[in-house]
Length: 336
Image 1 (cartoon, rainbow, N blue to C red):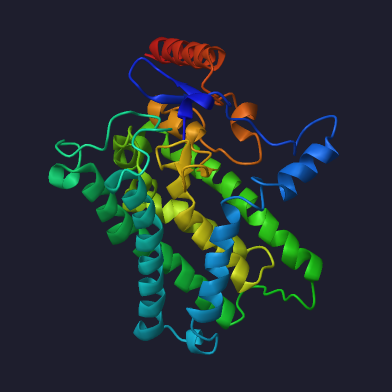
Image 2 (tube, one colour):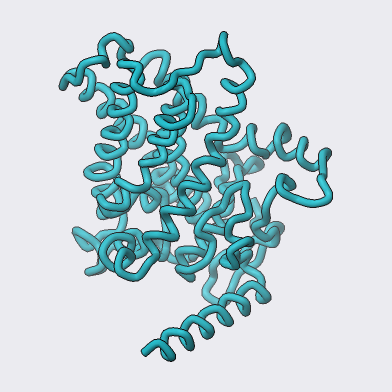
């Protein structure tokens, strides 16, 4: 596939898409009902995009890979180990398949790749001096166990009826609506956590580990400090507060666990065949890893636009970012 039809190359050989990151026609005035319907139901769109396969993974896990509620009324090593092994296996397959296709097999070379370089294999910034090995270590040794701990706590609370539990038969409209709201809930939660861990003391102690990945690849998505994993996966606890079904919480957990892959793939598109490519929607988050203080969230609600941290890759957005940096530097200098 010819990526020059979709973007250009910068002076370092990285791909820059012609289509800038933007927000969908959800919170807009005047309302755009036709545009909203196309975004919600069309392809690629809100439902028929990355959210759908993640939901199907959650649904299959609920049906075949989750113990009965009666079993989970009591905390026991057996069923907890099953949840952990399930999450480990799905994570390895999901992230590993993307890494193999794009970085081991290099099916599409550097076509659509934001950074023309490949992940570092000899850098003191990374454990084992290898970026991918470091990323896999943090994702599997810290990320999946902490994700599982949040999930297990939720199962125990649901099983013992310590938190509200809504059913399809009693509340069908809310039951369906909450599935559509999960990615939005996740986006708001992620923005709040992300801004918090960019506070300098927390950034140095926690979030800087994730940002060693300036040239991201799939496994970078879950490569975080344990403290960040603890805050990141706390989105599951939202369903302890609002009336939910356990499947909603499971979908939220898988959304947090799996959605970092396309956002950190390092490519604007993943070529499935010579004539079919899937958008990753990863350019906005790539810019976050490149510039650090932009695009803290990249979902439905225009949080970054409201708070002045949105960057769409255009020269105008870049100038706005530089002005914010100069203003922040002046404030810091005057404070000293």
